[in-house]
Amino acid sequence: MLLTREEQRILDGEEGPGKQKAMEILAALGKIYDASRLFPVKSVQVAGVSYSNLGDAGLEFLEELAATGVKATVPAMLNPAGMDLLNWKKLGVPKEFAEKQLEVINAYKKMGIRATCTCTPYLIGVKPEYGQHLAWSESSAVTYINSAVGARTNREGGPSALAAAIIGKTPYYGLHLKKNRKPQLLVNVKTDIERISDFGALGYWIGKNFPGKIPLITGIPSATVDELKSLSASIVTYGGPPLFHIEGITPEALKGIYPKPEEKIVVDEEEIKDARAGITDETGKVDFVAIGCPHASLEEIKFISELLRGKRVEVETWITTSRRVMEMAKRRGYLKAINKAGAKVVPDTCMAVAPLKGRFHVMATNSAKACYYGRGSNKFKTLLCTTEECMSIATGGKR
Image (cartoon, rainbow, N blue to C red; front, side, top):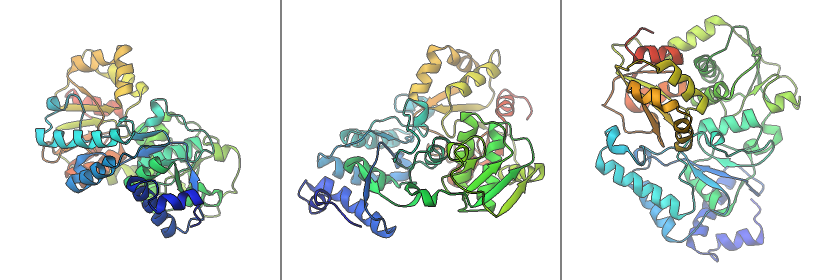
């Protein structure tokens, strides 16, 4: 990979050990992927925030890097942490975990990374534009920004995203290149895909059966932000690349940049039923209802508040979101009905990264991604439901 004179100076350590370490990471990544050069990025999203994932070794790395005095040189923000950073005690988070998690956050803050702690930065005012180059790392956010916005980012690892934040650049390869963004599979949907969980099931089926192939999806007349968010999360979680196109909806498909792929498949009602069955276990009594993977939007919280108005939950129920969205929901009065019902709106974290193993056994959710991490990380049995079904289960009703 060709480095500029300034980049070589950083790599040689002339601007300190912190920048040198960051440049070493980027140079190694560029070599692995045969990148021609480094390229400036507009913003960075850093994963590797939950102490559950980092452990002591990760925390030590962050603290040592922060001690060098390096700072982010472009706008940079954090993925969810392992807990609500302010009210962790009320959620039953162990003190030892909380102390370590706060040390992680403080290390990132010292390096100038915003403690947004959300997997949906595009819902809190971070608005990348079509064609902009980024270095984001959380899988659903990367897929959403590539697909629904048409910005360009690879799925960065935590260390490479942090390095990109410090240097302000990332290696120029992969989905930064137009030639690597063209669709490889035409998916003709011939059944109604109308709800968040439907989009999650569709993403599960495509990702699992055609791993690594960028799809061009037809037959979906419209999609909301929350539905595209759900599709983004599931398709990449279950094996797909962090990019899809939808005819008539996503920007690169609207612009007609790429020819339609020759390989074609049809998705009908049976495929969606099979997808739901693949994510749903034969279970006992649900003891945990989880919404917000990826983080819930203001519109989702409003809808849940309407579903819970005048009711009382009988099952532990979390709606995870960003702190900023939670504050907006509070100002608009949406939290009143949710809190009165006994459900919890939980910021900064989610069921995929919080230390929940052993606390619950059967989880109902509207998120295909949450099912994946519930099974894998926490050994839950899972049920993929609509949002309405989740709230019905939470309040003692039937699915």
